[in-house]
Every structure is written in structure tokens, then in C-alpha cells.
Image (cartoon, rainbow, N blue to C red):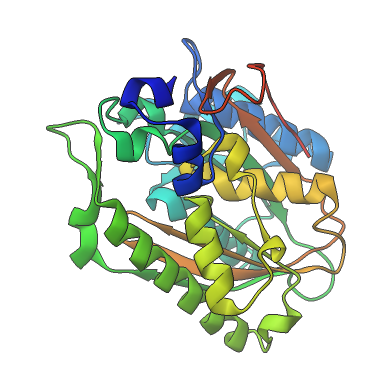
Length: 321
């Protein structure tokens, strides 16, 4: 569909993005509905009752309403009646920022158990006439349950960074209502920013790059992921990716990738994982996760595949791990 609309071939799109298919929210699907499904799956996988949840954080830049928060609606729909709820907007870095916040709150004893969800429907704010963004973005959600565990903390350290001077390179204004992006400049800053953040956080954690079993990066563009791997001197397969299947799902991309990594065996107990993200703001960073017996991850993708390649049939996909 996209290849035909823009007069490009499927191969041309794949060569530049690494994306074959994207999921697009159908009528009746939204950031809240996808976030609810992912959160429910995470709670079920963790064998945690919604009534035992103390807080729900939804990382999103595409909430259903300006107010109330998407988190309040997700909290209600999953039945977390005792929980507080708030949204966090750090664009594509939102899940990383939310996970760092959750880890700090649990470590401080403020709460015991948190649902952290990344959910976005960026196709709702994508200019259908803009080639540079239309071929990238899809809709989806992913969620984890964070709680206090015995032994040393498995989440952290984290490094969070921002540079508002570059805000004009990637933004959505209220007046226009659609995303504007200067792709080549964003590419350069994303590769440089995530590479530096990974190097810094491994030093802070007392690790070398060789100690890292896997990098789970925001799935912005396959060429960005390749650039990060190359600069770090890592084999590309150590930078996990399902961008070919889902495209860029913004704040949802990291938890979706964690779900697939756990399900597929790329992430196993004892794995040292670095997560990293880069998004509008610019906001970026990295964090270390020491993988335990993790089962509390859920993800959900929109029901309607928009195919960039005809190598896969259109079908409904909702994933959980």
C-alpha cells in the first residue's frame, strides 16, 4: 500500500528502514485499549491480582484524551482499584524513563508493585502524505510488572538525558496535529546518543561491552540499530529487533521487544541486558537490567496490518510473554 502510494518499491522502503509490515489501530482501537490489553497480559503472566497493584504508569505521547490520563483509564479497565496512575511523556524514550521512575519508587519503599506500560498510536498523528514518517510508524503497547525482589536490585543503574535545543527536529504541534521530522539529523543524533548512553551506563554499572548479553533498543529504524551495533563493536544479533514486523511503535517498542526476547529465548535468567532509547525532545538514555526469572511481560499490537511487503499475510496479532 505504502509503496504504491509513494511510487516506491517495497525493496526501497526495506533498504532504508528495515521495515516490512506495521500494525495500524483499527476503528475502536486506541492507546488506552492497547495499553489495557498489554497490562492485563503482564498481570496474568506475573500471576498478580490487579487489586495488589499500587501504581500504573503509562508512557505515551498519544493519549486518548488531553485529560484524563491514559493511565487512569488503563488503571480502571484492568481493575487496579487501589492504584494511583499517571502518564509520562518522553516520546519514544517514554518506557525507559517510566521504568527508571518505577525502579526508584519501589527501591524507596513508596510502593510495592507497579504496572509500567508503553503504548502509542502514532499512526493517528502521522501525515499520510509524508513519505519519511508514513513508512516508519505503527501502533502497539507493551507492559511489565515491577516489584521488590529478594537479593540485589535487578533494575538499574539508569542514565536519562535531554536536549531541548533540538526540539525542532522532531515534534507535533497543536496547530498542525501531525508529526514533523528531519530524518537524517534525527538518525545522526540517535546513533550518537544511544551509543554514548550505552557506553556511559556500562561504566557506571562496572561492566564492559563484552559483559552485555543483549541490547534492547528503541526500534526506531533498523539502520539506526545497525549503526549503534557497529559503533559499539557488537555483533548485530546482540541488538535485538522485531522492527521488520512492527515498525516504530514509539514508547511501546522496548516492552514489545522484551516480550519477544523472553519468549524466544534471547533473554534468559542471568542475562545482562542494556535498554536504550532516543526520542523527541530530544530525550534519550540507557539502563541495565539483570534478567531474572521474568514472566511478567505482556504486549499487544493493533489488529490491522498495513503491509509494506507482500511476503506476509494480513492477520490479527496480539502477543504476550
